[in-house]
Length: 360
Image (cartoon, rainbow, N blue to C red; front, side, top):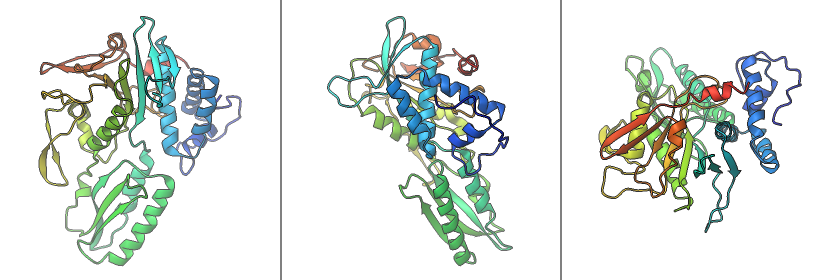
């Protein structure tokens, strides 16, 4: 098992601070974390002995990205087990040495491959700390403004490096109006542009900071779409992306998801100040559809261990042009949406957090 449920725990702190996610949950005596430990232990039972060992090894590492991706894998597998499905881990694929995450088979006999991807997982801690830290860099005449953010958060070590570099730069340049700095982490998955303004100016950070949700999601989906080519069964990608308080675009998440997958729309790019045609996955509004080996995208909004027992939004976006349509049984269980002949169709089904609460 992942957690020893008999262990005596006394920590009642609600803030994780500098602890890893695993250590924070493992040491917490709070009731909500008791439930998380029970759930993840139950989810682990879905996997084979070999799979359990591998998951335990990954989840205990002090790596935020691995923690979120492993928990997502556990939660998704648990959902399908609760739906009485057979679950095969890392199935063999004809003509490929690569293995999808799961092969799912319903009692009806319908089946599909399921690939998981977590898009730039992060914890609000890093972005909120960045914003708070930058807000304090000011004097009577000048302050540091956030012009833009691209990416979704920093690790603890990256945040420490960020603080040191930015404070040093501020101390040198704080009297130079319109002095700018672009800071990036080592793999350039996160960047932030800062500018020194007079306190009489209204800076962009007082209104919003752009987060390029569309680009990050589309890049991840296309990478997974290219991974296997044509398969002998339907192929669905499950993904999650936790929204940021930095973004105004994500207030329109349902519309943005639809446009990212199906196309047929434009989006305002605040970096260029122009309206641009939105790049998308399937191009269903054109004569030449793309990535039709992908039968659907199962998107979960904020499905993470800290929120999994509360209501969260999700939707199975179906590709009507797919070479291998998604099993029809999926529309009996999951909220769904698809576009056909310029008309959209949708339905509401299970409230998924009820599956998690029922096991506690």
